[in-house]
Image 1 (tube, one colour):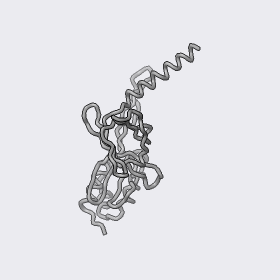
Image 2 (cartoon, rainbow, N blue to C red):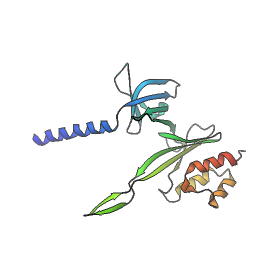
Image 3 (cartoon, rainbow, N blue to C red):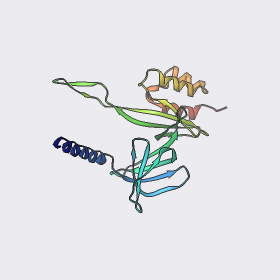
Image 4 (cartoon, one colour):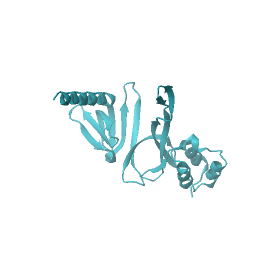
Length: 203
């Protein structure tokens, strides 16, 4: 009985701590129907749904990513984080992404994350992982509804390179710049997309 009571206390304590790490924040959501949800507080749950509460109704309401156009969330420092929602071409799933570059020919989106990296020993058998930031890239050209998954540089050797070469195969000049290393994959997809925007001519 005592062990059960301890487990219950631990569970509720962890649940409370997790809720504080992911609180409801001031938000604005635009639906794919064109409707806008103003004066709400919201947060993301399990990276699949957006949960919000309104002033008139304190009950939490879930919205699937497939029904969202964009969401703006304002953090405690007043910084607005804007996310967009698209269906992946290669999967029947929707992803939440940030806009990294918008041009007349194409748009680049990304998901930012941090890997723990390799550990650094501090003695007594312990090690600390060095955080390594990364960006998973997505892209779409003008007129496309869905986005194309491009991957993350360095995670799977050669995969990002293959996808970049395939996607931009309609611009021989850009491919040549990549082969000659005047454009480098390690610098990210934005600078490659900007070159395409400024120097490649669509047929």
